Amino acid sequence: MQIFRPDDQPDRPQGIMFLRERLGKDCESGKAPMRMRVWPVVSMVLILISGLIGTPTPALWGEGLVTLLGGGTLAILIAIELIYDPQDDRAEFVFILLLGLASIALMTVQPSGTAVLGTYAAVASAVIRLPKRMALGVIIPIIAIVDVGILAAASERLLVFAWTNIAYVFMFVIGHLLRLSEDHQIQAQALLEEEERTRLARNEAAALDERSRIARELHDVLAHSLSALSVELEGARLLALDRDVDSDVIAAIGRAHRHAASGLDEARAAIQALRGDSVPGPDKLDGLLEEMRAHGIECTLEISGEPRRLPSEAALAVYRTAQEALTNVRKHAEEAERVSIRLDYDPDGVQLIIADSHGDGDEPRVPQPAALASTGSGYGVSGMRERAELIGGRLLAGPTEDGFRVELWVPA
Image 1 (tube, rainbow, N blue to C red):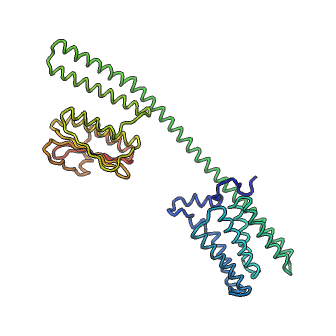
Image 2 (image 1 turned 180 degrees about the vertical axis):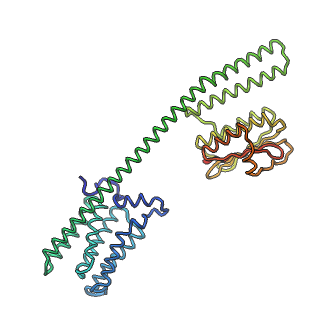
Image 3 (image 1 turned 30 degrees about the vertical axis):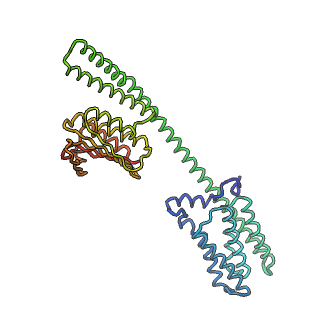
């Protein structure tokens, strides 16, 4: 059974000091809350007050000089505890030793005062805060000096000697019990943290299993169906060419084939994302713009801020929103001739703005957020909005004077 803290533990004390750290995490300064530092400060303040009002009073000569030095040391220790809050083992060793020696100095000139409480506090603090060697380096000299002083006294020294040492044993046991209790709290906290990590690992494994199952279903059903559809459409186009079918029919079959091929690529990309492979993000926006330009729509991309790697969910939300918005432009905005995309990297997030217009040169008017929030109830816009909200973002979409505008913000 460990009575003192093992020597191989980190310098930062445990016990009371560990509780200080736990309770002080919400303090910007990192100092321990005042309520955890009251008891040593109050003890020293009581001893200091007793020394100042006792006899002899502080002076610059004789026994008064001893009172002054002892009280001054206690005052300095109080300031150190309140301002600097020593945490290192060596600093704690010096702090506790000075507390005991200053109390002994006051005891020699004011034997009827409360200075003995300082030696009791020093013994208990050494057991709680210090490893074995340092703790013994504090406890043995303090008790030895006090015992020698008591035995040198003229009256009732044996009774005082017995009661004083019983008090030291009591403080030693109290300090040891506090250390055991707080060590158990440390172990319990470590077990809780380990259990939390295990729970998170199980949840992550379950999520990966589910994503793998969905990826298999997409691959076996959707991807195979789109692949077969693409082959059939290409065969239909070749058959139409061979039989001199109307050119508009051939063109329509060709467009259908391209859509099927695009859907197949998107299904494969979704399967890769579910399996944890590379996820499309803002770096893939140029490919979407090239596809728009192939349909005769002028596209511009403006990037502000410092581009950086985004979390996979945020990167995928940006890409999918841009993809859905540009797809809607091709499907529904028959008069759209120009599309502008702006990507802003903010310190705490990323904003994507996509606006289409009729090509008259006027900047699309920015709709009010309330109007945007109340419009765009189609499944595509709803899906974009749900994707953004799932990761703590927001999406606004609605018509402008000459087109449509989509605004996405996601945290990053």
